[in-house]
Length: 297
Image 1 (spheres, rainbow, N blue to C red):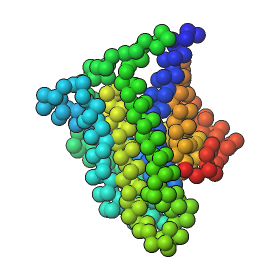
Image 2 (spheres, one colour):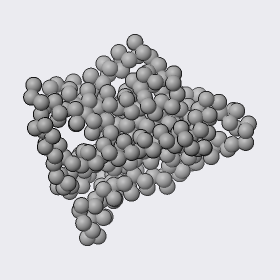
Image 3 (spheres, rainbow, N blue to C red):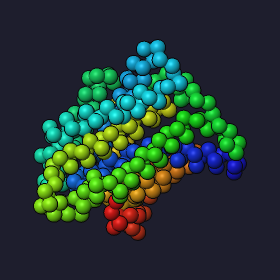
């Protein structure tokens, strides 16, 4: 096998892992703190993709230079700072501490609601940014493989977010409260900390990560309303591999899934999802708690 092909597969896998991490990180942090399964994470990611298309089109229609299109993409992701609290206060605060089946029903309903809103606002046809944006920053010849510079931009942004998230969780007061609440919510509440307000912040943070991932991927693909189900499968595969509630697990799991998908697409594209299911089965059989499942955040 040529070296250029190997490099292309690995870098494509890392690029996939960068947005897969953002998809699963919000799911991980919400489960770690609130013990809630957010099966709407895929549709939230899709919402971020559609917001990214809209923000970029508005940005370009205003006559601003194409080379700065990364700015509206980031703004699209951060716009869920307003969306997250509306969802959490209006719906999700009623599921905390409830039976897991009730939680799943609520989040499934939320997923359907978001999908319908997407269809009402953007229609049923796929939406995309101008085709030239993905290659606008050029390509890098790396060991015989041409890689779009935008891939490296997304990878860098994801690494920065992962580092910032790790710093917040480990070094800041907010992060220490989150980790304490994940271990013993009753004790944290007894110490006078408003756990409901913390739940609002945690869900909003997770929502921002998901919509940001959706917005960043949009120059390389089209936004499709129905792709939330597949994204949900990938998100849960990542947390099963990495371990429920572990941010380190989200990062490692995303790398495993991203690189394996890239290799499979290169040689056996019809087995793309099968290989993900296979890795999940192997993980459940030999390490059911995940790679970092017993080590917390």
